[in-house]
Image 1 (cartoon, rainbow, N blue to C red):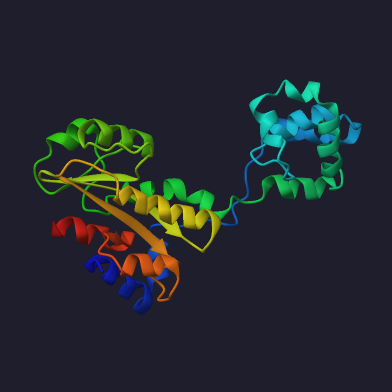
Image 2 (spheres, one colour):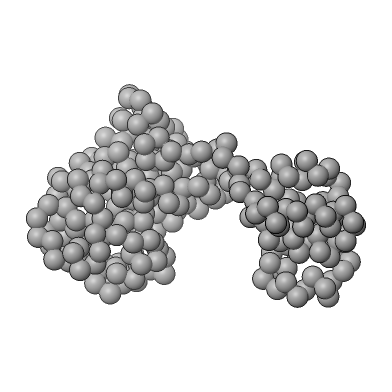
Length: 260
């Protein structure tokens, strides 16, 4: 087992792990989605008038469609299909009309699922200088010679840099790139809140990055947090403890970088 994986398990099981982790992932499950007032007025008007075509078009403009239906994404990609498929529109709007307007509002403004909020949170945490250095642009990143440098940018920009300079070939974004001297550190950051489905995919995604070929002066790490550090016979725990893979909590990332 990797020493930082061991330390992460110890942290998660013997200290106020979740209290500390909230500084990295400050989830806001009660924050409702914002709805444009003009768009909602159009929803109300066409709901009351019984105009399914215009009601459907208005609902497509909202951040969250109120009912789940496999045909809805098609209309989002091709709005002209609304006029050509009145039976499908009427069918879906029939389900919408089963909801009273106040319930419809509640459905359209319900908070994002916590796993959908994760994307920017790790980046926001890095931007606070928590690793002992604030993220810098590419020119500054490449020219810095002392201490730890963090490259600024979102996942696609970081992947592009890694492709150009570090021999990274995977068609997948990265969550961070750091540098200490001539050594580069790349990786993905995930909060694994549960097991199954999307969460398993997130775990596998991070592990796959560890196995991606790069140049020799590149270290790859998986910055993972959540249930995977709970001692069990389940796959995630067994994967990180039965192999010397660099998996660690975000709370230990600074220690790791300065140990290099």
